[in-house]
Image (tube, rainbow, N blue to C red; front, side, top):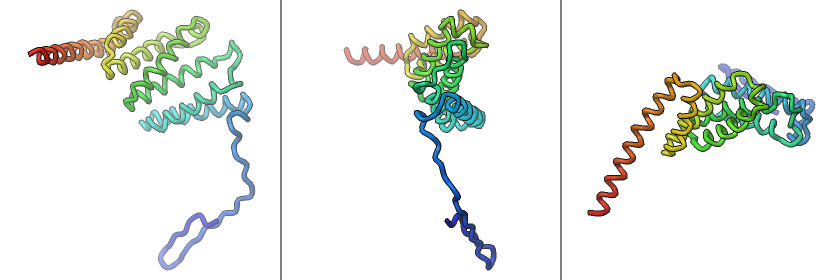
Length: 198
């Protein structure tokens, strides 16, 4: 097969490759648990490198593949394993990607599942930095709720964060933004109602 041709002055260079053999990667349902975990770890690492490079869409794609591998049938690990923590960390990274991409529903969905997992006492005991993870996840979800004008849900998450970390500066700033937007929405609604009844 001709791979490339390149002209260098008056010479034409042609590169040919011969494929000796080819074996496609197995489908996920054909993989054993060890292979699924290895591939998930590779996808997570790729996702993390892409996230650091601000390639949020590509990072989300890699994290999605890692998540798919870890939640597929037959991949559930032993209860003493850190399987749920791995899934939660991937979901946290996915929610960050969706936050950067302004995909609010994705932030809310994955944050909800992370919190459900981290609030399970059996998992929380095993997760290092559990409270930090909860705060980050609550903040991302509160931010997403704010963006879609779900102010009550946003305030509920902000209250939970401030219970855990009363000095959280980012959350305090978000609360100020929410309060200003609530006032703005109330004023706009009041003006609309007044104009309807004139």
